[in-house]
Image 1 (tube, rainbow, N blue to C red):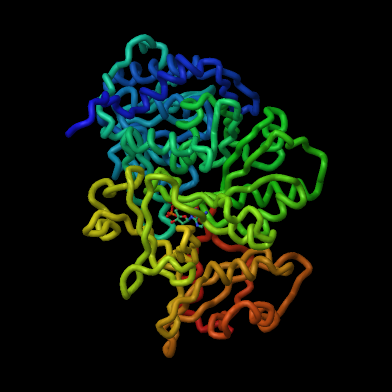
Image 2: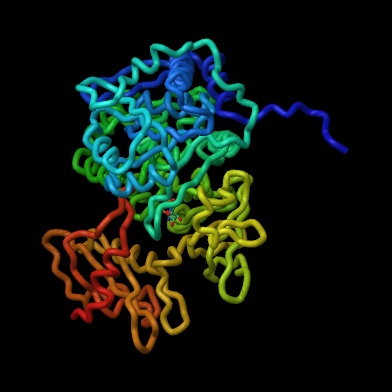
Length: 536
Ligand code: ADP
């Protein structure tokens, strides 16, 4: 027997409608390229997004077309998040930190027809155009237009703000596209449906997720070109929470100005950003009034335990960890302390919060190793698999089919343990895991232990081939100024915490750890550099 409820398609149009009718006074503060702050509201967002949709239609951008963006966290990017899907097209966020060749390749693979770029990125735009021809090029902001481009405001001026150009009733239609950052392989396209984005946006608002509500002021430091800025540009207009968009200024000084000046309550970014902010706060304790800030979300890479502890003990700031993937919209799990842990000793609570946490509602998890599914004992390691309505069912163009299991799960490539309560701890990525004599060694655990030592600024542990054990760990270490431990001294410091066969055979001191465009360690470069080289 079927239920007798209305269908009500889950579309971004429904979020935009609500933003306009119910949350019209919700503020959007956006920092421009000249650092000035532009103030508008969700009441302004909706007609401008519809004008963009109509402008795209008038230019001849068809339904289903891909429209690339090359922008910072700025109000026009927010308009594109809604305006492009309102045309029935797909908004494809490009990461300006990738090389022009990579961007050209991605834009060609996605068959982007149009691109909307910020004027501060025109040089990057022109280099991408050398690799990929776009039918329409739209530039946001002041400055001379490159050949063949039109001004964003001109595109908006022609559009009728009253009429939604496409009747949005297909929640399964594609709304947005983002490529994986390619840390462990070629970038692959993840095509989000309206439905997946709406469900994800609602999930973030749940009290035990990010708990975003109307009274919040949210500053996404995570770029809007990095997996939908983790969904915040959808959750905020939906709930009415105010949005503060920092533009291209992500240094601690600029962020503090906004965090303090706008009385931000919730902010989100990768560990690198928060490490820089922490250093600044340590230099000037008590100089900044962050009393409004209730939560700093850390994701994208593991949040070091020391970071969570330092913010809390030294500055009274609460750090929450989220784990996710491009393929998951992206949030998959949240490291919130459960009720049963509330009275546990401080060290245990901290250790729990440094894990990746329980899956968010509607995401199912399981982990598998050579012998089948691993027990949820918090010890046995296996590759995490996920399933749910916010998880990709395939990559664009059928790439990477081996990442999807025959029974409909997605293989994350993350090696985890799962405890009896379903709390995940990531011990490695599959390609970074060290397999020594048939046993697994977690490079992440060794890195965390090294980075907890006062002498070590950064550490990346990689596998190098070994004739006897197949693979052995090698540690690449960046020392802090004024420190000069020997490799043996570092090994000794680790010895108490790990079995002896886990200890890195080699330690290489390096100037820096190479990073990807999203700020993660790029271990493939280190493997290329050290794997074939017998070293010291
Ligand atoms: P890429 O896979 O190219 O790095 P993503 O941005 O999709 O691009 O990254 C997803 C991966 O980032 C996850 O599979 C995981 O390895 C890592 N990751 C994300 N958040 C966390 C976290 N909180 N702790 C540990 N690893 C994380």
